Length: 548
Ligand code: SER
Image (cartoon, rainbow, N blue to C red):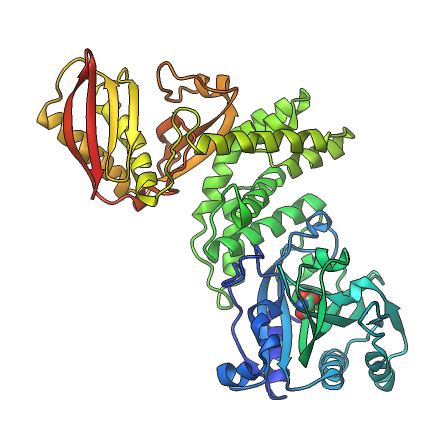
């Protein structure tokens, strides 16, 4: 069997011997390009070189480079489970910034596939042309000269890029090989970066972005390692390769794919959250939980071993945390789903990503009113923003970092006061500036020095423990039921946000109705100190405290 190591090595050696410098994969979380969530292609780390090709020689000592790049693509997530689509995959790529053109790029690919690996090319494509971009007859001719019989003209699919908000892009030529089922699998995409687009791909397709011809033709190629291994071994699917464990059912495949992607994303420094790449990670883990027949960590460990020596995969305890969190609500949420509960409630209370609800609905033949969901979410977000802007009790008006830190310290302080003075200590008022926090709470006597010291110690221990601060949206009744702290006398809307501070085992140190914002981890707070404890009014004490 041809393994991933064999192919990576062959590919790198092939291009090294043709004047390419081998460079490492970049992170899955793109540096410097905030307009994309993940690295989706090998060319991404080289984007700036297509507009300034002269820098390649300076930076790499060569105009041509070769990489094996970790990629995550969620655009095809609904396809995952079939023979060829994955969210995480490795892309073998060769790139040139003024070093060579179409003839070399196509000939290298042809030779690697047919001579180095001894495979048959089923067919290739070339771009038919549109607008300012002419038909790519040159590529067609090169393929013909190489003796490829089946050459097909194609449209939008064979114009690639740009990634993100703008960037290099151009016509492509793709190579297809057959898998064991006789199905044509696209394995290699050779892009001729001849243009710079001043807008996103969506804008380009909508006719509201412009293409400007680049001074120098750039080469960007990408071949899916898992797909190549599939066809090279005469397999039917990517799951038969040594990068999987021969998963058979769609459920097993989705599970494996999503856990693998999560392990890699976490290793590159992401944690599950409610926005951006963190939210994609959360969705992947939650979807994996739904299809899981074993703990996610077991599968994660298997992948960690599988890639040993190729990639350094860090601790992925985040998976377990997220799995644990979601399992608690999954069962409950599924019941609510069966009862026909609103997708909006499922999302905000049970943490069901809308994609999950849609998927469940599809299985049951139920239709979901997505427009209604989106409307409610938009209103909800407005509400949360209003909350964040301090328009209802418990929100912070000032979003200075220092104020945000003091805000989180405020929650830790209330929890510590309850621990030392008793559960019935209730908040009566609060005020936070950039210098200090102030809390008023119901308690009928002066605190002793020893009590103050204990409260300080508890808060500082919780800071040192590096606890996660997590926000959850839920109906007010639900929040009341779980006993979240609320300020006496305050009016809260039907949907509220609750901030939880949890220890590593998922125990709740604090839960409060609150509009936020907060730091995401208590380790960001520094040292907590009580400055003053005094009477505020009859039966109400006041503490002023700072972070040093
Ligand atoms: N950028 C192209 C792709 O992602 C070729 O590498 O397919």
